[in-house]
Image: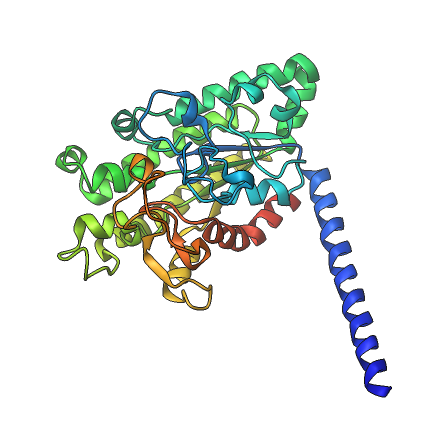
Length: 370
């Protein structure tokens, strides 16, 4: 009888803890919701939920097995088995959507309610360097900014000019790009290497980053988050293309990851300089750096802690070269994507994206509350 009472008390205690945690999370999301009017995203495939579905490019992911972990296994255009980190962020900041939609989706582009709470303008294969975009025939980042201006005009038709300005001030803007500039472009093709040293190319890319951020600030953005680049040398495709034995020697290519770290340092220095300029001009706008390198590096170095069994190949096909159309309905799949860090030879799995979201969460909290 005593044991039964103990078990009952323990069960009741656990129920209370669960309810308190649920209340805390719900209250936190509601509080964030009051502080964030919308969530707007720019960049490449790491944050593209399907804009490339609507343009003429080979860089698409709107066919099986992409999206296999969505309800009814429906591919959305995300280069993943499921959600991206920006989907988790949108849900977390409480903008009334579980999935951040693609701006070019015909169901979204004229839907002011959807535009009001947030969309992604990102395009898989895009980058800051104009040459990167021409290689992939995708949406340039400056064009993504034009789409945002178009979005603003649609909001003005409902909210009015002043209402739209107030809405933009309370929104959060998120940019994730750069990996294609180095991985697809500089390290893979000879064109930019003929003109730039690695440090010279980093500075060239950062100049384009600066121009984009200035454009976004000119549109009234007050809270901007921008990621660095990941450990590029650890992407399965980069290992395959640069390892002396791509089947047996699948260590990260340190030269490429070292360049990524150097770029991230330069980017942070430039963002700090821009922030000082904003402060000196009495602007309340803030730009925040989001570290993507360390969280991904932690997943690689401590993969067992995160539950990953494979960190150097993707779940789709052989995992060492497949991406976009090479990862298709005829490809063999791993039995459990959650044990893989990468979905294809370039892009993380939903589990890895969720881990990134958890790593970003303290910075997201700080952005929202400041």
